[in-house]
Image (cartoon, rainbow, N blue to C red; front, top):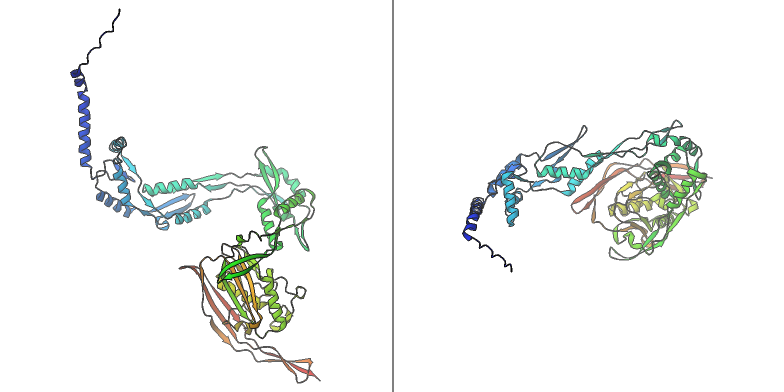
Length: 587
């Protein structure tokens, strides 16, 4: 029988002798580590740098002082270059601030994380090769965004595709050209790296060249087809309205597209040109819905409703019909409108509170004048002005003539006050002007009257009037709020007054209007007496009334909090106006 051999006994003394060198090394390492930690207990470990500045072995205060002194001498301005242009990024423009204390704290954290292995590794790297960290800093993101947008606008350039154009009736092809694009992420990294490393040397703007999709070679074979397409005019109809597109306008609507799958170029309807055409036509044919504030609680709107559906151009239908007409049958294109019913979705308009109002009085007006004032106000009332839109009174009041219900009343024409269609409508535009002023909205177009009209000074100082005379004189304002504006008219026959109230979503703006300054006052000329054979002898009728000439000027300031949104000045120059009398000569 084979028995297992007994194991050889371990010689403990021998093993201890073998381990002694390692024990001494470990012991020595621990001694060195303890001494190292004692020496640098209140100092940054050797080899550590901040943005290239050696702060190793320094105390917190010494390192902070070194960094602060360095910070006083750095230019804090980066210069980015592209070709022969420079784009400076100044620290003062973007609110650049260095936090030297935080930078030193980060240096102290190196080798003191509490993880033995990580701390040991960082200490060895710092001592052997050096360890650099970026400086701590901050800047205002909004200010930097503005600076970036300026550089983007200067650098970015759309590639130009080749296209056909007409010159002296001849069809030509424009050359294509490369575009370029700012590489914003690379630019952002360069800026942050430069600030963090205190590197204010000149840099190159990172730019990508963008190739055009369509070149001359791609479309030159289409010359004959395009010649044929623009040889016939294209007609667009809507009711009694008619638009004729000439060869140049048709050519503008013809675009080209490269099909990457089939590796060929095909003709298309140019989307940008179509959108411009559709938008211009929509202005003329769209019919805005009308709304009404039913009840309020102070300035707050309690109930708002849509009282009339709107209509708007069916762009998809128009696009298909236009494409077919251009590239196929050249049939006239009839515009189609879709009904817009927002009675259910009325909240989208944001009619929540009163923005401002304006009032005027017209005591002493004839029945015809009062009729015209209220008719014009009724046509305007309920108008919903989209955000960003420019409102035209002439467009919304409609034609001012007998066919549309207006009566004869006194108007200013040819330097005289005479009977005419729609006399009194200027009372409506004046009231609208006052509502716009008090609502803090920008006035786009406003014309004062030729002379001072007594109606407009019954309740306001001189200069707060606005004249309209179709088609040349119009009153316009812009809705620069973020929501719709509802214009609502209120009349008070007992007080001979008209008020326009503007409802929408308040954005905190406040309005300050100065008292008007009146200068250059001049007396009216001597009265004019005119013979009138239609009046009995001895009868005298006054047809025009004397008014002093003057220049009136007032200023409006629109604020939000302490910020001035805009300031505008309205100046009216009124002629001195003579009284005119008709003297009867009929026997």
